[in-house]
Image (cartoon, rainbow, N blue to C red; front, side):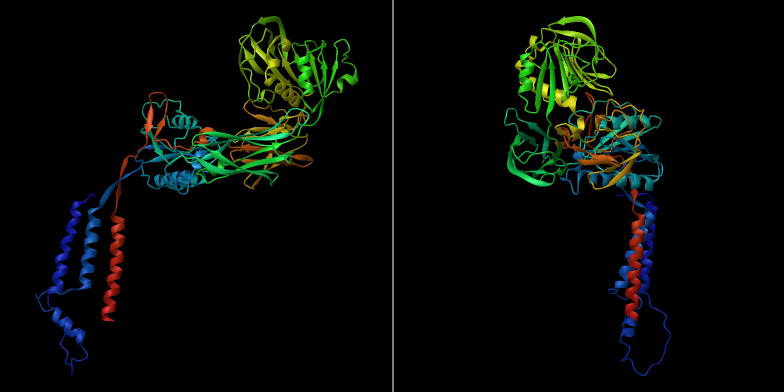
Length: 638
C-alpha cells in the first residue's frame, strides 16, 4: 500500500496534545459539601487529573487516539493497485453461448462472467468509455461506447444466455470494426473459450485483446442426436434412435426416459465410457405421431443438453405411378415400402391428358418423359423435359465422380453416395427455382425444385448403369424422395431443428399476425411479412406445402431449446421443435488460452492496474468510532 499525500501523516502530531490534556490538572470551582461519601467518581477524577502523575488507563483516550490515527491516515490518501481497464476505449465481449450455462462455477459461468462485467463497469475511471457486446447465436451490441456506468450495468443485466453456439469471430470482427476510430483500444473477452477450435481471425495492430476465462472442469453428458426411423418389411414399425456422449473424464451411468406427448413410454439405463458416444434404440409399439422427448436423468454441469425432442408424424400411404419400359431396381424399392401402393405404365400407355394418370400422389418418369412436364409431383430419372428443374445441354459425360451432396436436404437424409459409381451422366443447367443436391466435376447430378403447382426431383443418370441400386442407401433414397414430393418439411416423418435456426412459415392469405408460444411459457405476437417477399437462402422453410402463396413469417428467436407453437385464427397451429445439437458447445472443457488465427493466441489475463484510494473508508471508520466515543462518555457521566 502506498500514499498519495505522505505529508498528511503530520496530523499524527495532534496525538501528544490529547495525551497531555489527560496529564494536566483541570481547573475546578471549589464548592463546600458536608460529606464526600456520595461523590466517589469525582474523587477518582481529581486523583486522575493531578498534574503529571502516572497516566491511568482510559477507554476514552484510546478511542480518541484511534480517531486521530484514522483521520491522519485519510489525509495521507493511501491507495492500492487493482486490476481493471483504465483510461481506454474498452470493448467488453460477454459470451452468452450454451457452454457458459455450465454450473461448475457458482451459480454458473455466465453469471460469474456477468458479475465480473458489472465490477468492471462500476470501476471505470472518468476518462474511460466502454461498449458491451453479447455473443450467442446472434451478436448483439447491448450498448455503444459510453462513460455512464448506470447504462453499462443495465445493458449487462439485460444479457441472457442462449442454448446454442456463440460466434466469437463475428463478435471480435464487429468489435474491432466499431472501435477502429478509437485509440488505445482494449477488447476484453469474458468466456470459457469452448469454441471447438481457433477463432480464425487476425487482430490488427493497436488493438489489445485480453481473455478472461471462466470454468473449472468438463463434466457433461449430452444427447447429440435423435431421430425416428421406420423399419422395412411387412412388419414395419417405428424405432427411436438416440445418441448420447460423455464429455467428462469418468464413466457415467444414467437413465434415459422417453415420453410421447408428456406420457412416459420407456425407461432404460445407459453406460457411457469417458469421452465416448453410445447409441440407444427404442423399439416400442406405443411410438406414434406426436412430440417425442428423451431426457437423461444425470447430474452434470450443463442440464440444457440433457434433453431432446422431435415432432414425429406417421407416414401416410401414398400412390406412386412408375412410367417406364421396365426397371426392376425401382420396382423392388417401391415394393419394399409398405406405405407405397405402386402402379406401372409403359411409356406408350401413359397419357398426360388422362385425368386418371394425373391422380397419383407421385409419378416417376424413368428414362422418358412427355415433351412438356405435367403439373404433378414427380421424379425424373435420366430425363429433362420442358418444365423440369434443369435444362438439358444434350451432352453426356462419361465416368463422373461424385464430389459432394447436400446432407441437410430431406431427400438426401441418411443417404451415402461416397462409393457410388456411374457409367455416365447428363450435363444440365439448373433452373433459378431449383437447387442442386449432388455435385460432380461435370455439374449437378441431382436437383430439386418447387413451384406453386408441383414439386420435382431430377436424377441425372440411369440407375441401371450404376451400382447405386446395390447400395443400402438406394431404397432409403426412394422413400425419402416420395416423402419429400408428397409432404412439406414440417410434416415429415421426424422433424427438429438446431437451436438458433431461422425458420420461415407461410400462412393463408389475409393473416396479419401470429401468436408464438415459446418453450419458457411466454407468448409473443409477431406481424407477418408481405406476400411478395422472398425466403433467404439461410432460412429453413417450413409450413404447409399447399399454401404456395400468402404472407410469411420469418422467425429467428429460436435460441432456446424446446417446442415453439405458431397459432393464427382459422389455421391449425404449427409446432416446431428445436434441440441443442452442437458437440462443440456440449464439450464444456474450459480453455486457458483463446486461440486466434495460426500463430496467434491470447493468454488468460489480464487487466491493467489502476489506483484505488481508501480515504473514504477510513473517514467513515473514524466517524463510526467518534460515535462510539460519544456513547461511552455519556454512559460514564450519566
